[in-house]
Length: 312
Image (tube, rainbow, N blue to C red):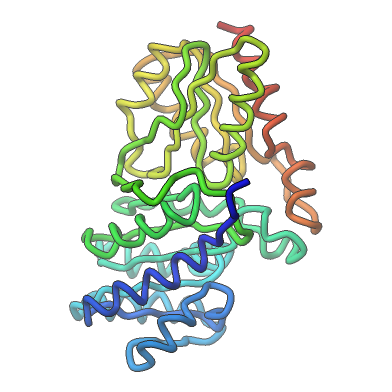
């Protein structure tokens, strides 16, 4: 079985590589560098690292000022704090002026586990996708996370990259090259399409393999760029497979499912199902148990696929 790898660690080590090649890259954190893994950059480049303390609003404004001065700031904390705690500062200081700030939220979704409800970011994608001009990326594994960070560093404009807490199984090999705004077909299929983001991509691939044994041929797309979303890939999937299931570690409204549904409704209406957290906040517990309790594992995707195929 492939070894699981931390997206956060990949992020921190990639920052160090980028920092060696570009002195304009600076990193900010909000007293969580050991958890977000920006500690690697802090150790290598202490004069270009700024620990803003438990003051996420200030961190965002400082990052905006650095960007306005020509720097390329990466600002990191838990996803529940950015964009959650400092949404107004993100809106006013980054989105409205369109500044070149890279926000990286770790510990997204319910997979933070025992940290509990207060630390579970299940609304962050809805919040950040509401802001004009932001590019939003949700990598599926550590390899894609590192690639996305590199692309963000060389692409002008506001970015939000969402990472999860636990180590995740690789879905790509080292030859993968992340392309901004492009979905990746992880598996071909003709009966339905599962469009997933983050750690749900691995679950979608498991579900597709299980469904194959039942005679259901399931296409799987990794929609790692949530904004701007790959409309062409969605329209093609709807036209060729006639049904779509979305899978995300986020509330059902405002994230991947909502974005895909807008494209489908406008261009190619087909039956849809949504694997996501329903209208509730989750409890505290081990992350594997939470994913199971709130319907975010392969068997839940399989059930959704069976339902949507019946509706074709």
